[in-house]
Length: 485
Image (cartoon, rainbow, N blue to C red; front, side, top):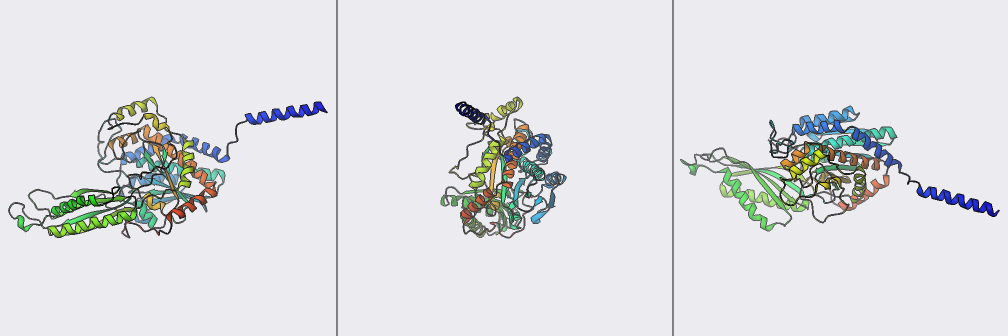
């Protein structure tokens, strides 16, 4: 009997030792995520080609005809139902696959910026035949989101999961507030969670919010006259613009220090010897609080009224855009961070490193190490509000929303720069784009399999939103389809 007890004890010890050495069981969803990332990597060249075609088109807001059509075609070929021209915007679309809940949305952008024509080079070299460029990397943004949507559709089919995946084609993020019209149209009404991302110079979860923004074009109308022979007969519209600008610049002393006001004179006359009978100035007002933005904007409009009165001109203004601040959802963001870590950072080749080192020489000030492109920034909550604005903010006030940034540019690259355009036209941009596509896909897979996460996100969304009833800052105007004219 004693020998039997000793034998049983030894067998138990051996089994326990074997169990201790065995690798932990990988969750089924993680296995699906890894297979999905492999699928995306196999499509690397296809998605690179799509993004580079949009990079070459470099179409401005509401004019992204070729870019939007290319993304729509890719989704249709993958089996999505595509509704084009939504919310009164010819280049906006919604692509859907599946049925029922949960409904997971992915945002896609594809507009370029004016005045940023650039080749994929390490020195400033405008590209022939175009004056605009993707200084915010939206060619990568749209393509990665479409890639993630297509892969999630594949997984819904293969795994037999229930639910709906939607890719939202969102034009004119750069000042045109495209998503605001889509929100106003109710296109996100039944969505459970929305995912987005943005090109950048590091891999991180977006926890720092955004600035609310309201913009308008102020137009002054005067009387033309010969500036030398009969100036007394003229009333200069440009004087109205300059008087307005002067008053607004004095106003800066009496607004919150974290507010931002920018303007550009878009039209100021044609010849010095003709008193201008028309002039226009384009204004942005920003602040972390949407209510403060509205207050400051109203004061800017009062300055315009006063300027017209003082110069004996007439003034009218047109609201161009208006976006909310970003309602950050920590529940979704924590999960998104895990899925970004699973996707990994950007790995540079020797050729990539050579390009990076050369372009870094053009950056001002202290430059972060190139190795940061391979890292995932720690999950934390910075105290400072992000300096930019985005119409994703309006989506976030209607649906639980989370986003990430991916290193599509060499670390230290400033946004809206020729260097950003250049990086976006290289393998550096494509590799960062694929990191984003993998992270979006991983996060989507998690949401389709974790009803509790969606509930936590919705509870947090309702708590943070509170009693506020969403209202578009741009009012009930129709989409400003000609704002880039």
